[in-house]
Image 1 (cartoon, rainbow, N blue to C red):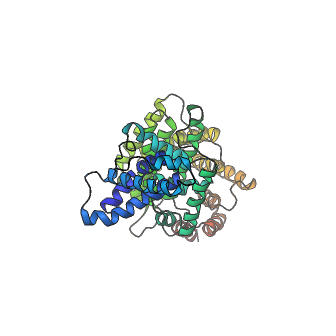
Image 2 (image 1 turned 90 degrees about the vertical axis):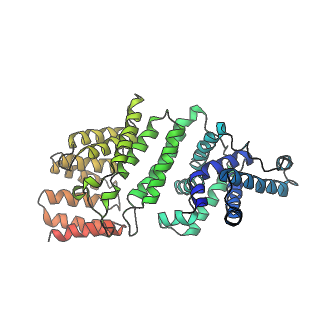
Image 3 (image 1 turned 120 degrees about the horizontal axis):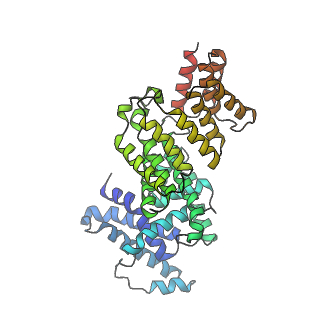
Length: 408
């Protein structure tokens, strides 16, 4: 990664945020920021990297914005007034340290605004806050580049049409709106940690980008325990990445993983974040409870040594605060691991009877595991083969087929 690429990846949210505050137009802010990067690609190799690269990018983007203001001046008085500002390249009012954190936070809330579709929120967050290119986003989610470009373009137009203000939401709205931001970061991390489709089990770059953005959010909102809950969940889950795949990228199941390869630094960071979430004294939220479950795995030397009774209790609590069929499915697995595979199977069969996860490979996958433990081999094989047919990820599918063949 070149110096410019590294600077952009780290500082893009601050740059775009400051420019959005200045221009009042997210689309224009990103456009002029990209023009500044394009100019840097030409001038920096020729003239040398400036002493203050971020200041250089801001000053260049600001001049491009003023040019745009002047072009619009004839039809918009506001832009006409801005266009006559001093154009000496000073960027001090943009890079105000007392405002820059609010700029990044505001940018997160705008990119995750509820007027946008879930897919648009994810794409816009990765583009404007994460600094990823449309090509990187498309590659991460296995969708065509034009699709990503269209989502981002529509999102910007929707934000402009809805007159979404560039600001951190008022305190009364912040908690509700924060849930939308956390949801976007969770979706990004989940897709990175277990890809829904394709030939790779993990998309670590995507997962680590979600971790980075969540760390940023935690630094900006130190009083929000559920932000730390999500950070803890991401860190603890990511700690297993080194052991989750083999030399050829094949999936390695939890019970077969070499836990000595788990990232102990990530586990320590995850536990610390979970402690901060719990310290607020409000009780753990959905992300904090999932992090607590992940901490149970991190504390155990093996699957057998895991405190499955505690895991069951945590899933019961999670089912009360954030009920979903996936939570119920995971609770069934925990009940089975705690010593009652027959009871776990009854819980899964209830999900099947009510058709609460239609088309998902997860239900037949879990049914196959539980039927295997109960000695119902033929039924288990049929379930695992069904799960393989429904699974869109090649690495997961290979594991399911291997399990089915082992039952022959």
